[in-house]
Length: 218
Image (cartoon, rainbow, N blue to C red; front, side, top):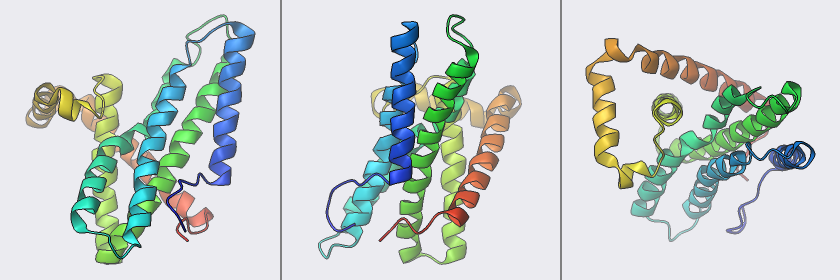
């Protein structure tokens, strides 16, 4: 990264173009705009990638200072769940009967791949930053914590309909709900099961992705 421009990797850009074309084709051919919300979700998936890219750039600058990196990490952690969240949009498959199921599946699957790609590249940025200060083992432990928290955040977004910005706009309700889940685990088994299974899936996918991709930081 030689300047401040946010460079989207070519493979991710291809997926983004595919998801866009398929969604616009759905709107044009079937006159159905019910999946246009995916564009907003893909933008939200881009936000943590944008934040982590800036953090990597500033980390290499002599003027980099700790408060900026801490603020950047907090903002990144709040928005990061929006990227893998796109996987959960697959639940909309087949809900609009006028559109062939296979077409809806392609639209949703391509959008989910965009979200996963943004999340993996962004997480790789953060991992590279963490490794500057911590050992490989501690970095791995921190990543596990990040993915656990993010998986729980995805549950809050999908099933309870909270958003990242509710930390500011409706923090009382948000933290009350989180405390209810923590303090009454037997009454919220779905939250724990979803978090566990989603964490395991994302962790394994990210581990596989790292072994098939070249380094993302120049």
